Image 1 (cartoon, rainbow, N blue to C red):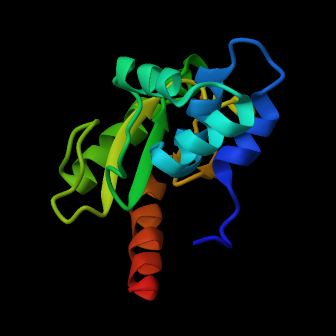
Image 2 (image 1 turned 30 degrees about the horizontal axis):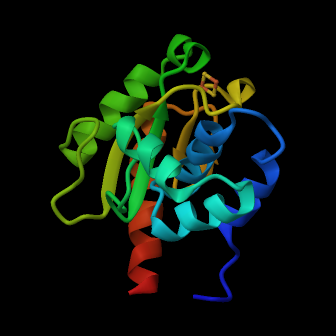
Length: 159
Ligand code: FES
């Protein structure tokens, strides 16, 4: 565990000189791993010089933030304007029908969690989905089963 790169430190380092950037830093961590845990929060606290209590205040105020992993793979479908205009609503529908869950829910086996997010910062690739930090651009509904299989295979290999 100690050898893993410190996500909270890297993100904290990037944002610490920018005023009012705590929420951006928390978004970046959640975008990368799907949730913000105790270690991320403490690393961020130390790197940014923000009291841990303040970080937890923000984390618990916005129900967007998750403190525990909601699924092994967190699927974020961008519903920002560019992605919406390019048809990401159809991609979202395909994820829902393939996984038999709604947005904000996890599959009963705990493998997938589906969520909608606003602009992930790569509108040029719209429509965009992100799975555990991996970006899929120019998405079509037809790609959805392949992406789900890719992650199922990955989890099988890790098991
Ligand atoms: S609107 Fe989807 S990446 Fe910007």
